[in-house]
Image (cartoon, rainbow, N blue to C red; front, side):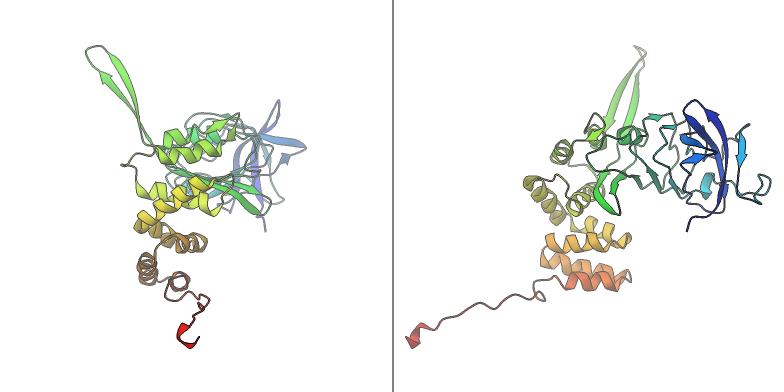
Length: 320
């Protein structure tokens, strides 16, 4: 059930711009329209506590006043659902929202300002309400986040595709005598963020980036890439599928940690399919030590010793 929220907003040529939300929920779902105008923009520092909004109109349920309403901003914000009508996010919209985990949006988001997700260290995923082959603003969203972050394409009630974009580091090194700056990038995450054409994900390029990942890449990030693709194998070729499975089998410790820490049963079941029997047994012990008995049972059910197989036929030729 949606909790009532109030909004401070102003009129813009395309419709309405939200300046700040108010309410008791850390996971607000924004309205698609305010007073007959479509909500098309999220104003500067809308969800940030760095700056108070100026001006604007007040729109609220009966009995809610701006003086008593709780602002939905800063560390209070955990998840935000933007309507499909939103096309623009202005500067610093989520600045310093350190507890923000997920942002939902439609395919129409196309204009992003600067410092969008600065200090959003808990940000885990962008969720797009559209098919996995749709043109979206995902590339621009990812460009605003250098840390590892996931992306999900939610078509109806199910997740049609899940991707993970590893972190990367960007440096400017000064060449002092010449007063020049050398630009360098470390990490495969930057390459993954270029796997788009006309706003749509190019899954072949995305999967090819895995083969080019440097040996120094963190296994946790690459395990997240592999698990996400195997769990939602949209446009996944057999060669890439085998490569992902082999990587998980070679890095069982990192893969199991991800599943156990997130209590991710589907991921654990997938690992049960690709890990050898001894790694599954070790993983079951990890689950048990973490107090996740269901996970341990799930893995043990898939070991070679407990998996039921049809009995082989035998023949005794001495009786012929």
